[in-house]
Amino acid sequence: MYQLERAIFDLRRGVPVLLTAAEGDRLVRPVEGHHEGELSTLLECCGEGPRLVVTRHRLEASGLEAPSDTVSLVLTESGERLDPGRDELPAHDAAVPATSAECVALDMMRRGLLVPAAVVAAPRHGRRDEIARLVASGTLLTLDAAEAQRTLGRLSHEVVRVSDASVPLADAEVTRFILFREMDGMREHLAIVIGQPDDWPEAVPIRLHSACLTGDLFASLLCDCGEQLRNAVTGIRELGGGVLLYLDQEGRGIGLANKLRAIGLQDTGLDTLDADGCLGFGHDERRYGAAVAMLRDLGVGRVQLLTNNPRKMAALMEAGIEVTKRQGIYGRVTPQNRAYLAAKAGRAGHWLEHILDQDDSA
Image (cartoon, rainbow, N blue to C red; front, side, top):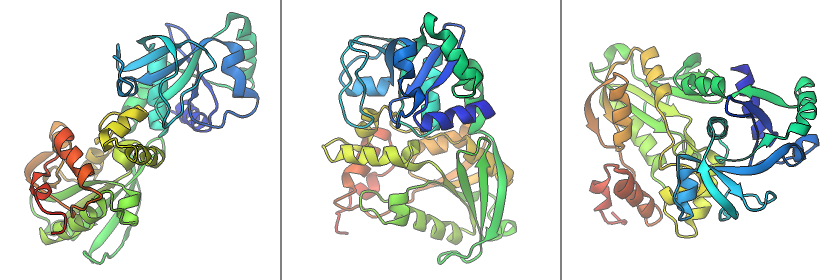
């Protein structure tokens, strides 16, 4: 895990890493990043025919057919690059299925909350001594792709309880915050325990709430997240107490930087789902393994769920959490958030028809 953690940290700084695999090693560098210093030209001087690896979503957003979920573009000119947020795909001769190492590279980008796009190249035979020198000196990190994939697969399913404290809230005075951290330290989640557990209903009221800095803290008019959060706290208290899981899944799991990029793309006329697709993300990148682990730590196995999202209900049920009842949780519909809510209802299947039928001024 240590090697993977360092590799993701290097990628977040724009520093290349070397992924080793049976089908061939790959030098990998993220599309975004500063690319400074000795390693900035490593791919160009040490790699054979650099390629651009992108997701199916990015390719389809450009109107092209994708041969697989992760695609390697054989560039027409190796010097061409992809802007993290806006440009069309660069000129390329072919789009072929990515290698296993290239697929792992994009999974690492997602884990590091980077745009899922990378420049990759097979090491040139004549430059292997130079690459070996960089690896031996610790300048360039090498990582086994298969081991990295196995580790990535379990990270979000394991959490450790770190700290807790009583935090009285305006809408629920008897409240305790418990912080959980995922095993690689990349994500921290809060369990907001409302009321006394001994007094909870047999089916515990819970809400899985993905963090939304713009809505929860700054009351953005582009979404209804802040109102949903506060209404959920009140609703759980009124139902006899329970748990609100405040999950570090900004922007449906793409992170704050990419969420802001997506909002910028929406200014050009795209809806929230298509904007994410242009960046290379699916309609919803969230996973709920950490939420399930937190509920199990809290001894919660039977719940009534406050949600409008069918994927949350399905994720809990698939993990063995019994969902006895679902209750909708809403904010106001405004002129600014109506298109956002309509896209979630019409394209992602969220149960929002009830409020979308209301007048914005209601």
